[in-house]
Length: 101
Image 1 (tube, rainbow, N blue to C red):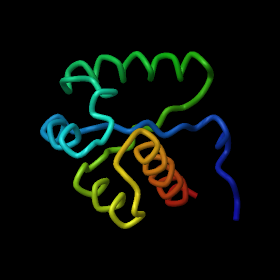
Image 2: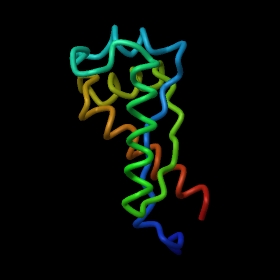
Image 3: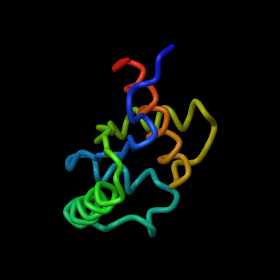
């Protein structure tokens, strides 16, 4: 299987839907570590994208359906927390990159 050019510089970044932000907060066991509003999260996410690009990576926005994330956590038998969100985004990024090969 061929690897995509510059695949090491690609990085998936979870992109949450504004209408699902409250659901994410309600279901996350680490709610206190998340921004209170989607607008606050979006501002932080945009800053993160700029830092990632400045470091020479190619961030890929990974659309997160929170309901799918909740189901994935249940299937994995893990709590919905920062670690789970990272694992889910990494898995979605791998799946997306495989489709691009």
